[in-house]
Image (cartoon, rainbow, N blue to C red; front, side, top):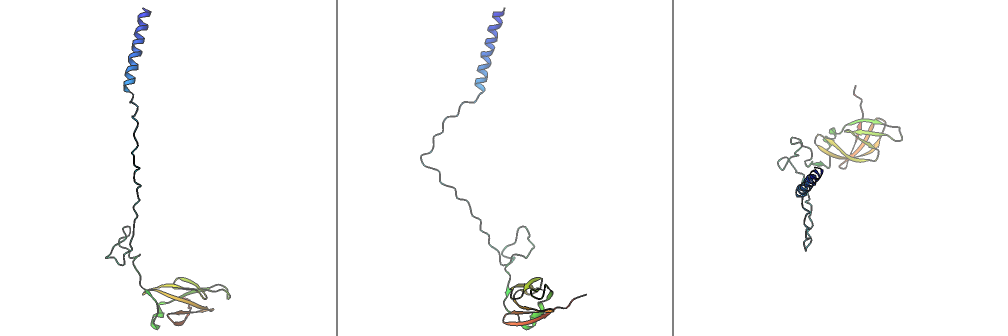
Length: 150
């Protein structure tokens, strides 16, 4: 009887080996390489154009915003437009004073753009005194005085 059981076990082992061998995937066939190399892929380049006004396009993240459009820069200020320039403060020791003009800080001899209700304006701060500042813009010179608001 032992002999009969051993032959039955060996038949089962053979049968299971055949089943598992059939279930395993076959080795992939070797792939032949093409004779000519593949062409290189070129990445697409994005180009962004800033619109001059809202009719030409809008910012997709801030569609109702007007920032980013071309701003007209005033190059000179007529005499009456000096009212748009406000001296907001003077600080620092007498040998190195700083002036805040329309929310921008200037040192004596420094020049730059300030923002007014009519657009940007390029000015040069020529002198900073204890209570006033001398500025130049468009060939005109003006002294702005500081008055504290209570």
